[in-house]
Image (cartoon, rainbow, N blue to C red):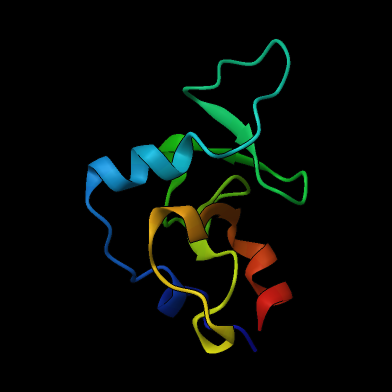
Length: 89
């Protein structure tokens, strides 16, 4: 079972969170400062970063996992709806 509380504990500073947020996909006719989509098409809400109880909650996740040679540089980070983290486990 996925421990949703545990995956929400990552700490990124507000500037990094803003930069990663901007990597989310813009939705036509929706304010991109509030709502975007992750790479799987799930809607995420800016204010719901780290909230596993929200249907729009999201996390910051590696594109290429560390275990496969990835790193935590901004180029390798993405906004991801929390439920999609399972796709990387």
